[in-house]
Image (cartoon, rainbow, N blue to C red; front, side):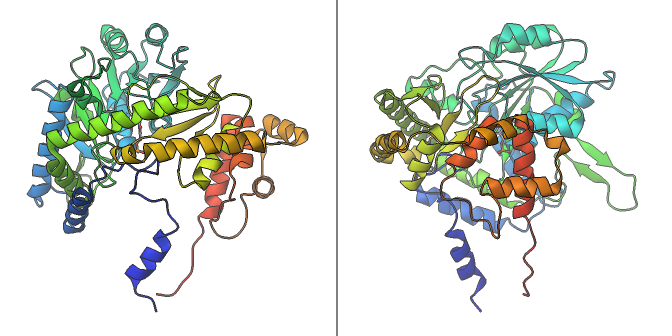
Length: 473
Ligand SMILES: *Cc1c(COP(=O)(O)O)cnc(C)c1O
């Protein structure tokens, strides 16, 4: 029998690389192997520690308070600010919404006002916590429309949301105007800086302007920032900061309603591994402020080079000039964006498709990392070659009958058999987890479908992927 670690390495060979700067979504690479090694060692050292009880593992409380304290400085937090380490951006967002809801028990049907570009985690929070999302379309610049958001606030609003920046388009919302409207109505304002919160603070130091979005903005009550993104920490941590302890209070959960230990939690998890926290603490210590400023310089240089490279390719168009480290672009009619993505993937560059949504075009998403900088010339060569290949390949042919069928589909009426048929048709059925080599036909089909159909089809797909492998050990 192969030893487990050898087998793991074999399995992992099928995954996207997490180092090398060529995976432009999901992973964030500092390009500093020594720092990564420190992070891995810290994760391993704390893999068995349990954050359930900070009195039993006081070192975890210490690391959490130090990490939050450092973030307070980054985010211009007042002396009253407090924070919590969570498992990721989604958990931070869930808790921001849950806390806002539970701070207002007087509101029978709580609502939150969010821009249409707010991260899907807010829709998950809406689903979990019964807070109705009031979705306000963004303006032509892809930024939240502050006036329309202000007008959408009513007596049932418990939270108003802005992004710094939005994941899909990489632009920072007009936080001062949004936060002012929220404050005027006595409503909480959460800034989702999950992806920008650890890199934007370093931008002014290297001479780049960023619109205001931190606690320096009056009316901002909480901010989320993911350390497993641009703090370049191992996966599994994010921070949720509140302006005051009172604002955080409803996030805490205690239960003495059973005969065991009194459960006392600051996050959704109860038992939680010390690994991710120790990894984040160690990596941030190892990189330090100077290191982060240097990494920000590298990633922003990469952004500028990629932006210039895209401008030099006429079939491509940026959706907005990036305020941060994310680049989103569209294609003109001469090529299909999903084919372009397949061509980039075939050349060793993982980039992410974003389907068209509510009048916003389908786009190609790049989350750049510091480690991408030395490879930008190769990326731009690959991009030019991919454009050429995508133009040559022509449009993705979706049969008109199929297009009509998919467009008209009401997923709530479909049976499991119908889903099996649809998945088989889309090339997404069969044994194992192998995806088709070319995803463009699948993406083109999904792009025609309504959001509800996309959700239902992909849930059915995930369900089929997730089947037990019965092996003896
Ligand atoms: C990544 C991200 C999230 C969700 O974070 P996860 O760590 O993937 O759960 C939320 N908001 C924004 C803006 C993000 O970029």
